[in-house]
Length: 121
View 1 (cartoon, rainbow, N blue to C red):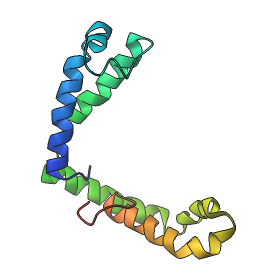
View 2 (cartoon, one colour; view 1 turned 90 degrees about the vertical axis):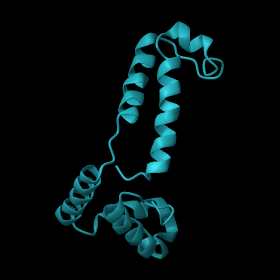
View 3 (cartoon, rainbow, N blue to C red; view 1 turned 180 degrees about the vertical axis):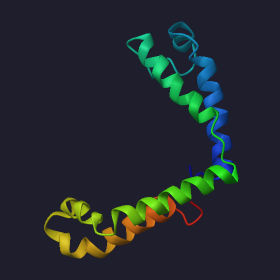
View 4 (cartoon, helix red, strand yellow; view 1 turned 30 degrees about the horizontal axis):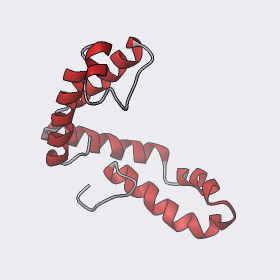
């Protein structure tokens, strides 16, 4: 996962709050989140807790980042460089003008894991 450590810290800090508030439907409804995010059943809340737990336990050590980047590089080699052509459909009648941009975004994604964003990403 390519996420700056400061952003990951903020994500994990907030995830801790979400996990505490979501111990049950009752604790969720009593929390500050329960007023604007409501669940129809406990199964949905349980599934979200599973994702939040994963965010809470993300390890961004050098090994994880290196493995991710290596995997991205392998994938780029395996699929080639013309797969971005599918994205041209979204440009509609301007598809010819979008070819260069789509190609650049596609290559950047497979190099960095981010389609667009800050240079720090």
